[in-house]
Image 1 (cartoon, rainbow, N blue to C red):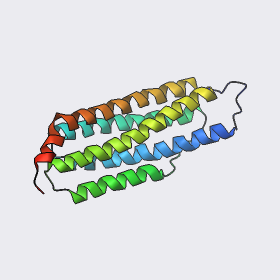
Image 2 (spheres, one colour):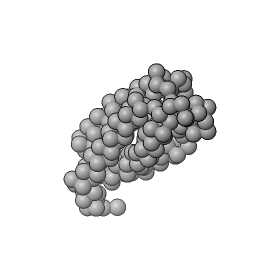
Image 3 (cartoon, one colour):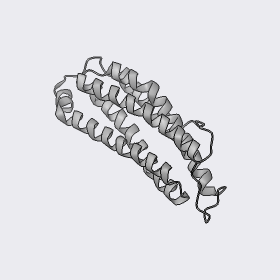
Image 4 (spheres, one colour):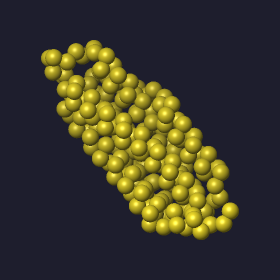
Length: 175
């Protein structure tokens, strides 16, 4: 189990904030595990379906890593509802409901929704990794940094999928 350096208070406001943010992203990742299969089912192109299915596997690993981070800092893994991600998930559901099944427009919307989630996760994991470093949790920083890089990779893949044709296809669909 990691311990903070002697000059960092174990009951500091920073550690409390760090734990709150861990709880927030833990809730989000666990919810994403439930939402990703629905997005994959709604997707039209096989490329997007495959990317979402692959990210589901990664997201399950992210949940496990967060549980390890909680254990490393001596805290119980607890989820606290993340209002930002709850809104992003709701928006994703609305996009699916408001677009035509089998359309490129739906895939564009799914990419938008997924990238909004990825960007939130990138910001969160980047901040958490820095806080872990400040608090002296080196192993936790490394785990959070690993997830950060995977989230960046998922975002890049979604951009590539959009640029590889679905945006253009959607521009050709008639209203």
